[in-house]
Length: 131
Length: 131
Image (cartoon, rainbow over the protein chains, first blue to last red):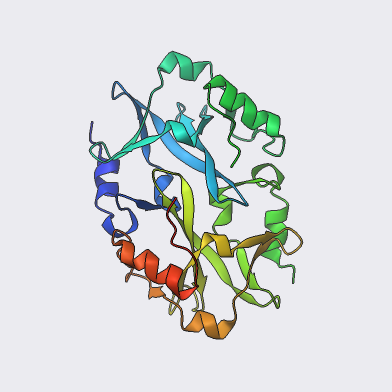
């Protein structure tokens, strides 16, 4: 399950510890489901400005060289970092992911509208991301 | 006070709202003090993994084309986003900044050691960043 990318990340050492990670290192980190299947990687994270809390991780899924790639916002609380895998684990089957809120490059949702975040929270049956 | 960079950022629209901002857009955002002096820009952010809380913003200060640049971790709670300036404002004088914990490129601190974060919190007289 260890990949070249995660091995490389594991070696970063000083910018990634058990407790603290640089945002720039979160981007690109692989995401696996509980069965260990590779689902995608973190493309970006959405931060609630005032609190500094990460509300959503935007996972890139599918596609090739950015073409056909879909972006799936996941409530941050779904992600659990697994040091052995060098990536995040989420309790998420592929069929659940395929029906989930997502968007293509250039068709970003209107994050200013709280209804969008709520639609993500609702789909994954999470409490609203209000901090 | 408006800069080309902040003007450009202000136009990003869909990835930066009043409440939510993409981490990739935080990087590069200008930092000003209360007198409106430009201090530097956000180079990276340090995230507390389990909680998803941003604990520190790493501000780049000084230098030219990365040479002689110093990185200053600031407790996230010090930063206030000012939409009119298109950047963060911090209550921080240059002389306070010059005596603050900082490091050069390639000489990153050991974030795994909680004492480092505490030294930053202590310098700025902030409560420890435990979430």
